[in-house]
Image (cartoon, rainbow over all chains, first blue to last red; front, side):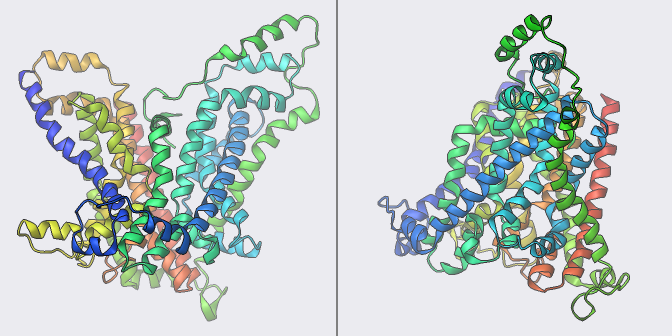
Length: 275
Length: 325
């Protein structure tokens, strides 16, 4: 294709512009977070004249972002550990063990994929209120686990299917119980998938706002994302502090992305190609 | 979750680590009585014990509430709490202009769906054809997909404010200010645009995984024959990726129906004049703010039916695409 080389270079122009449009909004926000209120009102685009951390510390301390940060960390960490544990247990059994009703149970798990939180929001809130789990950490953790478990079970099952059954047979002959096989063979062999699914679940839980809003109504239980939305009303005339709060909420995700980009993209791709 | 034709991109760490166990197992096979297949009761129950926690949680917190909600949608709110009211909630929904707007916006999403799929599809094609700098684009484009809708919404709130930077920039080149989020005629388009900005990287990665399975010999043949870029897309890429394309269509639609709450909540709160309502936002307002849980359940059931239609369409599409392969 003679015209191809030229057209490739022509394409690079809009693609670079789009790349710029992809990262500019966050750079803009980071810049605003460093500015004084006065500087921002005078000129929105000018580069900050100094790396100022006062806005960040106002958002972190006075606006309560530190509290929300710890709430999020706690809820997300426990949810992801539970998701990986329950998902790998079920995935192992559904992929490698033969037992009555296994395909029905697998379909039962899959059915969960077609019921998003919005569809069961009202009855779920009621169940949580009846069991005194609403506005508690265990309540929100359970809701996250229920939301992302079908996907986790699905991915772990298809991953474990690729492990040759000879390995399990050999371990059984070696005297391992089913639980021993899970703990000594399946968990270690599952590490790459657990890592991928774990990172994705961490992002999903960390980024959620609707479930946290419905299940954790009181102010001291706010997660970081709910905290950002409350900041908006509180600091509507102090944009640099608001931008600082947004930045605080985005930084952990940014760090994760910089280091684990590959695994995140692989996880997304795996979700689309497995089965 | 459904399935393209791509190779799984995560593979098990191959047996290396367990070679030892296999070898020692084989060595001992003669000496020990064979226990595989598990005779004891605990061993036979083990699979159920392993699956039980997951299935219990999914049944109790997903499938049972689904039935509860459908049931609930046929009862009353407030004074009529708990009493059967037949289809009253559904009739009220149909009459509610806000819910109608929400449904109309779902229609708008369906119309915009081809755009939301074509953008990542084209970009993935260009990256696959190795546009200069293709390695960088993939990771840059994917980046907004990991940000929470709340963060994305908050950032665009700043950028799109009436006295904000975008209007300032437009003003400096002589274009008047646009009330991006305050004009009911354009607010929904703006929110959907931001949603596409934030999520096209996801679909891009899925497309690239699909491209990895494309037979490059076909592409080379097309090149030798002097096919244009458009012809390559039309005759090689689209037919080769039909399953991936069908998958992206469905996941993008599901994403639009179930993950725009954060954007709506932060950017417009359903306004101006209720023009940016979507079913999920309507459900949240009715259950949390208006204290109309039964009406919200009716809206939930409607959303579930929409999702079911999308799901069935997906099965259909994937089946057809599978036949073409």
